[in-house]
Amino acid sequence: MFFYIMIGKRTVITAGHCVYIHSAGGWPSYIDVAPGRNGGLRPYGSVRAVTFRSVTGWVSNSSRSHDYGAIILPPNTPAPIQALGGFGFAHWGDPQLLNRMVNLSGYPGDGGKLGPERETGSQWWMARAIKSVSARSFAYDIDTVGGQSGSPVWTVINGQRIALGIHTNGYVGGNSATRITQPVFENLKAWRTQGGS
Amino acid sequence: MVIGRVLADGHAAVEATVMIIEGDVPHPDIASITDTSGAFQLGGLSPGWYNLEARIGPRTARRSVQLSAGESAWVEFDLG
Image (cartoon, rainbow over all chains, first blue to last red; front, side):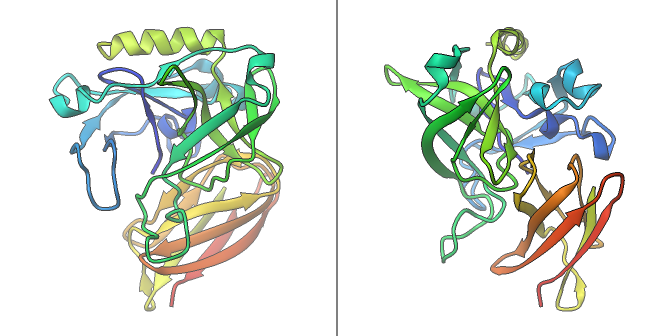
């Protein structure tokens, strides 16, 4: 169970460890993608994907700095899913990222909150400022737990959601995302084209 | 790697969710779904301390585990 980010009609980006799992034989046989899942409801249906992308740094070297990938949905993906639209994405410099308020939305494995609304498959959102930046990642105090890998970390520019990172890691000292750098940006563009942008 | 099993009502808990709640080292924010024998695995983890939760419906249990370098750790959850 992982989250993901649609960036084109048939391209979703996610964590590398969601599409290539070293401890489980590598590439999965398939991934079922259900946009907007709400508990047991799948408002746009779902589609089974068998085509995946990642980079050598993740697949061959398990490098946290290269922990990102993509799911290419099949050409017969239902029209309502292809019509959903997608996030924009951008690579920003350190000064632009540091202290920038960002959003993260995903599906925590614990259902998000204690209480009657707690249900696996429910989507939760939180926003906090980026508190530190490194060459290939950035960190924040947005609360996450297992299951939220692959979530978008985004800001809003002129009403458009712009992904700046891909959530991958938890840590008591600060959760973190793979940063969309120039090389990541170029790969995302190529994968978006492969998904029929 | 953390491997283990989830039980409910004395039997294997199928399609229970097992997730990392927190850890004292950076870790992939992953969760696992148990198979028909109630088994799960969480891979790609560095040595360190982790707090895990298993749940199925409203029933939950938490366990802490210390993962040592080069070793796997076994964790069993009993959801009652």
